[in-house]
Length: 445
Image (tube, rainbow, N blue to C red; front, side, top):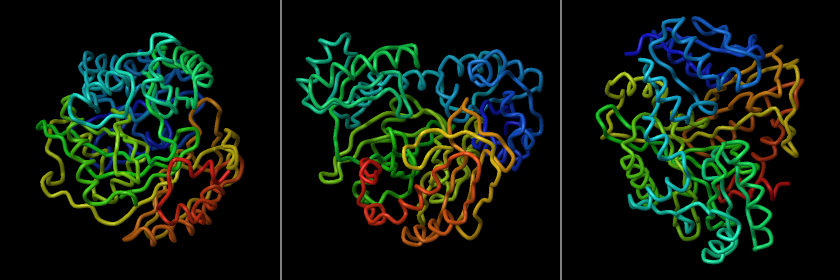
């Protein structure tokens, strides 16, 4: 097993990885920016290294600073968490070229799945269903208009190098496409350094369902069930649950088999997620993208399958067998995760500030993965995620009741936060019925 681990991230995910590392007797090393000096993950690590100012480009995306920290602390491995450099193939290659262990999939797999068009084409060749769309980037606006006419409106305009719900727009007709194409292209060039754009068929009433996969050290790829991710704002997730209330046993078998094929197609190792769009009426699903990292929502899978995904990541990276029997995976129970963000609960606009009061809910079936505590300052430099509230139980109804109690008990004063939104959602009949889709938040607003 790895003996020392540097976590190249911050907040709740850094704290989460550090917790498992320390449980396993692994020396946990944190890196932090000047803005994060007082956050819990810094003090909970065995060692912490300041790597730069608040600007992520000068700290959490600063490859030289991170590698220097690894060298100075004698770290054996690097865990990238999610976001920042986690899906940067060149960073993964640089880590391994430096003689360190990369706790994630191989750089070739990251690269192959990082380009949305290349990923679509690979999946189609592997027999994974893909939505109607372009097989090459729409080189210019005229090409985009031609492609959209062939696919049929409405269409989704997507940054080929994008991810996490960023760099996407919907066009109902040619006039809207002309506007969205220029907007998405400019955003993609600015954010990803790659202005390539693809055009896909857009499904107005659809569910977002994903499958957790794990590429084992022996080369096998296994699927650890699905997660429902349809509660979203601006194409970014707010709530995830497992199992999905929309997925039957027959559909689950098809989803998981397709996800395994997706992983096998790129010789996948370590944790990853195959994201799909699901038409709940027909039962058809289409490949959306593959996230080549640990997901924010991994705790719901951990509960349903009774495993620690971070531990499994570390075991794969160490060349060890998993803690579970891959041939006897058996899900049990239900779990829901709510992303507690520093944002207005109505318009979802960021709201940084000093946390004056922070009281986490407790009790049976309640877990909180937090990045902050009372007295910390939520700055505008990073993602607005404060914590993840995970509620578990034997049945979905039991989890819904526990979740309402947990949300009512979660007290945050200081920065704006979306806890009131979850109280509203948990009382919403559409959500409680389980028959919701990606438009639920817009209908609530």
